[in-house]
Amino acid sequence: MSVIIAQTPATASLAQSPIIFSVYITGSEITSSGFQYMADLYYFTGSVSNSGSVDYTLAKYPNTSLYGIFDLNRIINSTLTDLAIQNTSNVMYFACDFYFQYLSGSSQYTYVTGSHTKSQTYKALDGYGIFQEAIGQPIYNKTPHWPLMTDGPATQSVFTTDTGNAGVYFGNVGTGSTPTKVVYTSNLGTANYTITGSASSSGQIAQYPIGPAQAGFPLSGSFTYFQTQAFNGATPMGSPITYEVNCIQKYPNVRIKWKNRYGQFDYFDFYMVNRQSFSTEKRTYQPQLGTWESTALSYNDYDSSTLNYIADSKQAISVNSFFISEDYNDILKQLLVADEIYWMYDETNDNVRPLTITNQNIVFKTGVVDKLIQYQFDFNFGQAYKLII
Picture 1: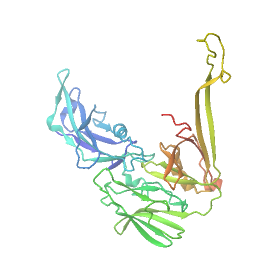
Picture 2 (picture 1 turned 180 degrees about the horizontal axis):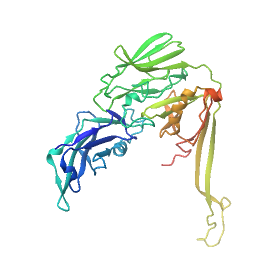
Picture 3 (picture 1 turned 90 degrees about the vertical axis):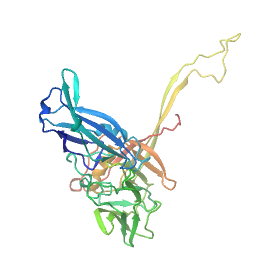
């Protein structure tokens, strides 16, 4: 009597949210004393053909419906330790071998050798689902732009001096169709960006340029807009994203990028007023003055009766958006909860500064109620002024 798998994860799951297997059996063994569903969990990177070895063995007693429900997300998510800026294709493969056992006598478990059922190999990405998405919902149903790994919005603004790459998924997610290129359409015509890499390895997320000044950007000339869309050959996939070239810039632009819920980067240009601040924290102590080990007591004219034993600093930046549409609200929520945020302070040399956002709440605006929509965000630098390791 083998274990039957009733519920499986999506072919590609977001690892911070539930990754569920539900299993059951039809035999009478379910009524045996101490009955347990068992799962040997395998996870690995590299090629999908790798099998790995058993990393964890999990046990579940039957619930009231006599099923065993295993949630693997905390284990799998703990393995995705790379920063998105380090690893743009943070993908983990996993599979489970299910079986059951029960007590023979008072303490000895009987291992049922014929009960094994091994799942297919699935993959997990460094990201999260949101309410009201169903448990196990296919990843390609989470955004209309898939396989472009962003929630949009469908129309954005960009400066010709902007840099930056975004992610496009070209591995198998259960649709049978994977992108081969990203097509750029502009007022000057079209251009292609070919996706390269192996769809059967962990490197299943390709980077394509969305900043006109980014290396490899396929368009040139005085375009007023460009549109990106994934294609499989001549067949378009998902909804396109349009970038309108912005010419208004009264203040220095602060370009922020942050890890979105798919583990890739979204970008926003804050080109209204920005202010940087610098604060310090000091603690002092009173040293003992004088030449107590000499023949007479004296002190130096440069001695101080108050010295610092802690002198640390905090740098911060406050930025303001221009007037934007309410379509940005969804990805700005992802900015508020992002665990990786960077200020692209020197785009020419690809230099960034890590940030942490200090806004704890924000009232999101709508065009119907508020007419003109602007937001202010406050960030602390992730690096203090003093280099202390």
